[in-house]
Length: 481
Ligand code: GDG
Image 1 (cartoon, rainbow, N blue to C red):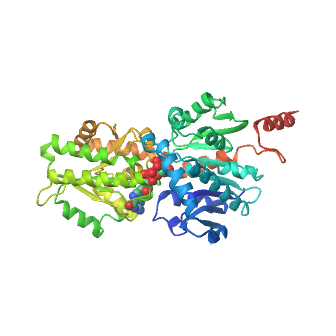
Image 2: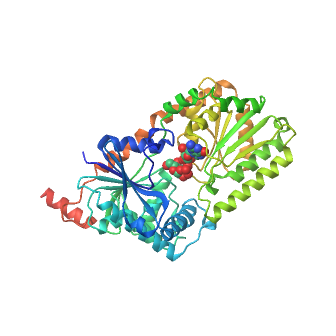
Image 3: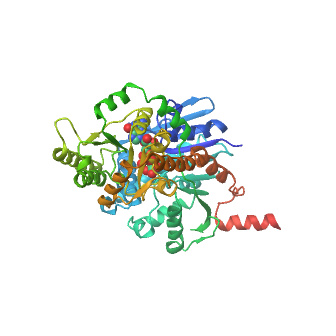
């Protein structure tokens, strides 16, 4: 079996793959270890042109090589801060109102993809399979193909794929989708995302899509599929239990003085619906006076992309809302919202989830939302908390035990909170068990292995082929005759 090459915007450090950072890093590293391979991408550093053009920097851990490169300030501004996070991210999360489009940034995005692809080529072997992750790297396969690379290349989109009417807002939408069609396999988080992509191919690219996920457009053949990303639920359950008697949990418990706890954890991002969530919590205090002084919302929101203006705006807005609501409902010994702009250790977070009665996860749009899955996995099965989950998180399709809400309906969310806080134990246990079964059935290993299995089974373009749909068909006719 050929090696695996993983390409993502950011590369986990060897230490992060050992478990403390995030499940995804651990999951992807597991696949890399099985076959040996390379994890390639940006180091996270902004560096001088000389340093960027040297390298990549290589670090090995057994059979796995971590290959990273810095970006120049201009590349960072245009590729990362610009087109990736100020155009693609908002539009793919249905926030055209927050998106901007600058031609220079788009040109920088394509330039950096081509430059990264060129750097990777030196590390490639002929039977490697290449797995590219996320929206930063849509043109990556096209750039590799342009340099003659014929290996199997797959792409997984971690965020939603918007419906065509939304995607059309990005002026070079056609070029982007054409670039996507250079992958052999594209994985989406949900059926809705895959359908939206197919819809674009049919209606805007004169493409064809067959029932089994084969598609043809822009003269290329490709496959698409739905691969729901998961977690390793039993690891989370074990770690959250192990941490439950640590000092931070005892401190929290003591400070709550018997009040109920609602927990929310999100990167500070406008797609996560934090403002709407604060207002729903406010509605709870307003409409249910019995909860005033008796329930606390802990919102952990580590800042991200803080040099993008829209992220500065959402931060300000949240600080205002938290202050306003706390001003209205605090007492001398009670603060309704504890809003923490800090990063916490992963296992600490899981133990806080275990301690709470409600997990409040209400994104306006989210590819999957791993926090929802982690919340369920971290619960004590004998006394589980209730997950209140947005219908617009990919996870809502799987977690049938959750109370599903519309994040634009603050009264509806308030009612779900009321129901969750008062839910009897047997119903909580039943709902938790349903969700744990779903998490076990489709864990992170299933996601990873099914994507890689499908990618490995894609027929390779014949030697000397340009990989086009026409050539592939001719090859098949020749082989059959
Ligand atoms: C993208 C898609 C998709 C959060 N705060 C802290 C912390 N976290 C961890 C969570 C979770 C991860 O970060 C966040 O994952 P999400 O899935 O919730 O959201 P995104 O970051 O937007 O991820 C998303 C995902 O990719 C995977 O495909 O589900 O839809 O947007 O694991 O626990 N971890 C630590 N400290 C924190 O303060 N250690």
